[in-house]
Image (cartoon, rainbow, N blue to C red; front, top):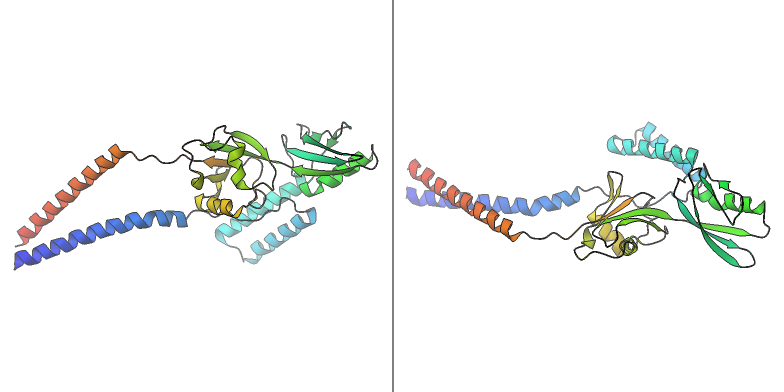
Length: 277
């Protein structure tokens, strides 16, 4: 009878141990994905100076009033500092580009680059400084500048976003894209995916901060979300990973190790219960 009860207890223990291990293997990936940061959707890239000032006032009120706490309060303070920096220094940096469309007797298109003095050249006219200018103010500033030299000319601009496309693409590097371009087009800008590219797992980073995880990037691609809608800015990085290759030799070694451990555990339990008798 004792041997029978011991065998039953041993089988239950082995079954419980195996089930727990399998449960952990199944749960851990889901937990990791659930805890990944979620990038916010929405952008203030084209916001006016009044809109940005109102946003700062709103965030300051939320922080001082205590409605935001912990990480949310810290993020709000960073947002306040970033917006105040824009209001002071403007939106443009050296190397930025924008497409200029000039309507005169005919339509003329050109691309202007921001030089190291934060000046640009428009229609071969004298240089214009755009230091302290927001994106929402660029058209007005350019039209006022051109009107000093040429009559009946209307200027419209489209500021390009400079993004890095890195990883499993044919020609990784920095590329300029229109803000209304879908994020799914970024891989094609870099010559298309490499043979081992895993397009369902790409991520977007700003410096060392992850803006889009794999789950958010998949949703953005399926929804046709644009760069501006995701608040992608110049300097952000698209990282395209390679598909994971299964190392069958390592899998076999791991299987043999686990089998040996399980065999040793069963023998130990058998020895232990035999001693209890």
